Length: 190
Image 1 (cartoon, rainbow, N blue to C red):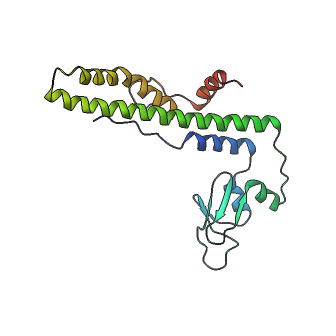
Image 2: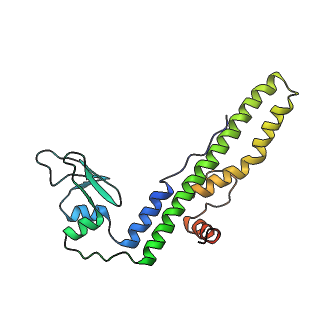
């Protein structure tokens, strides 16, 4: 059976969000703790709820939401509530953030596209193996098997690059997000 290499770790979009958090300097986790919420992993206790409110707030790098009282906030609201000055986003930072988000979306869509192609060719190769057991002279089955074996190395290497991991035998070292971002930026300069 042909296996598709699973993605390792978080999606490109979440990796981009973490890098943006480092650039902006406002961590939702730190802001929630500073504003009186007790944080447990990616959940927090709501300080606005009455009674038991254990882990009712879920949060991402940008927003927090209490599933009990419907309280919601983003990093800017929490920062202002704590009396911190929040500088408006510069044109350069906004452009960099937009480009980073577009890159994350591109990586995710390419990963889906390559995975789908790999699975499709793999399924056809498995069916071709079954057909060749019964009909060893089937030209269509041999062609389907050849298509998969000819493209397997390239598709597996592309999945490794898009996953930023060396999961197959086809790459010598794992790709880095920075290197792929630079190549993507050079080919998608707008």
